[in-house]
Length: 64
Image 1 (cartoon, rainbow, N blue to C red):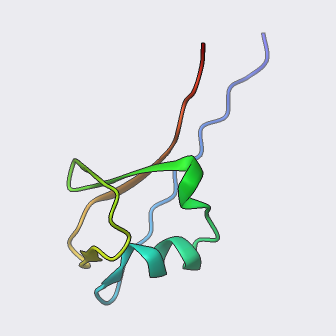
Image 2: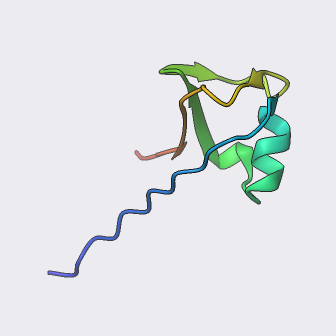
């Protein structure tokens, strides 16, 4: 059985910024991601995140 790879990256913010700026900085396409800030799903990319925010970026899973 092939080994599954899990990518977890920890990033510490040094200043407040919008999710849009963070996603751009990480070179991600928000259309294919689900973003959680402090455990809540966020769709507004103009949401401000702070250095103490817990942010998770997960792939959208689609199936049939």
